[in-house]
Image (cartoon, rainbow, N blue to C red; front, side, top):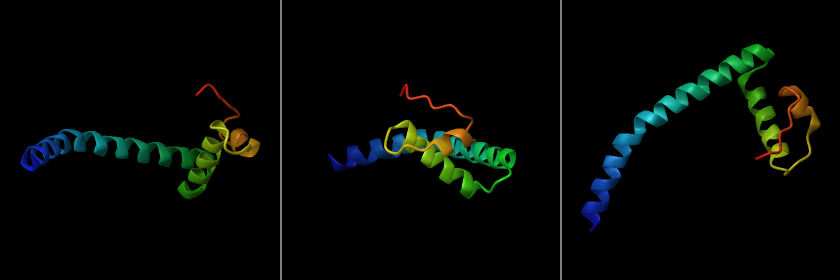
Length: 77
């Protein structure tokens, strides 16, 4: 049974690794464009993004990050 599991694991990895690579490239590109648009470093925009996500999910009230991210506070998730 361990051989079958290993074979299935390898096949799934081979199929989904290209999708993961494309996803990483797209997210990195979006991060670079967003940081250039704001005139801030990528690290700073990541902090703002995480604070905005905490506000969206109701973990932390953060109006500053909402205003910096475009002023949209969509809690429809």
